[in-house]
Image (cartoon, rainbow, N blue to C red; front, side, top):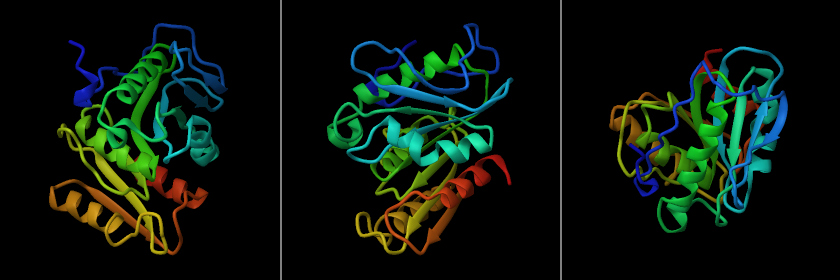
Length: 222
């Protein structure tokens, strides 16, 4: 049964045996209809591979998501799926879960039909990191890991499963200060029983290749 997007639950279940024609290597724009934007970057190779769904920061888009994590992910053989929020930031922050959840579910379903997926993680930067944590905690039966770069908060509409959590936050972050954001969020999730890896670094509100490498290493194993 399809769940209302307002509940934050995703129906798509990518797996190792898609039925449709395979996606080509490189960047493909998925046709979801209307003005929905979704991009998938697939590294060279065949067979099932890990898939990272990545959410951009406020004011960003799917292109920026691929720019932030795509190269490092490709080097690890990881495919990346990125959607653009309908408003300037994600629906949870802009008024309530709904349209962005539906777009992400449709994008995952489109990828599931054309890409064999071995493992699945949800990540994001800034507002996208808050969104990834919130949506990921509600869909822990789908995502095995949540990768949050400089999140502000986690406000899941519900909690399902026990995904592993990786959080990174800069000590010089002036957009989302580490004391009330990264440290507070990681402590709260640890106290709630989640397996949390917290990576605090000397820097600002950024995603760097080294951080992406650390996130993927935590998820996939070094």
